[in-house]
Length: 203
Image (cartoon, rainbow, N blue to C red; front, side, top):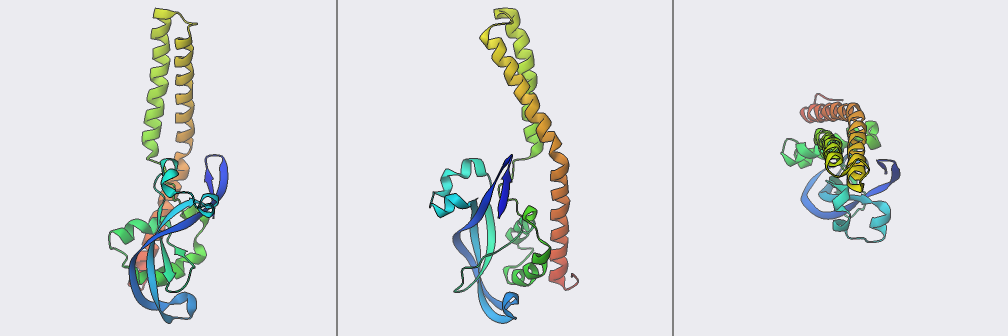
């Protein structure tokens, strides 16, 4: 699956960690045959790192929360990954595991790569606030340093650069907010559809 990290585009893939639950239900991907399914805890990692066997813990510092859930039929290797929106529903027990194959099978034709956001950023509001703080401190810090050590001193120049970088990061993050709000609405839509399918009223 392609994933965009800032300006870099690369392939990501799920790495199975352990089986959380096993249950037997009709397999919608195999004509409804009774099948044992495993609910797998997975870790989304860059595909080239997974193929090289790199320890997941080494990439966690930049990947953030890369946890995901997948459904795997017993004896098979194919993983049907749950979209991001359903993870909290499963964790909270609002979507029981035995219901997931039927629900996911109905949702899959409409899912896109944007419904999987494994490397979720921290709250953008925090990024904006922190970046603005760096920009303001850098700007006023330069003025204070200029008054004490001179405007052309290395410390004053570094403070100015730090302030400019902070303001640029804050502006770029703020521009991403509308897209993130769109993702939030999409998540809510998927949750509503999944709950409707569970109750037998969805499409």
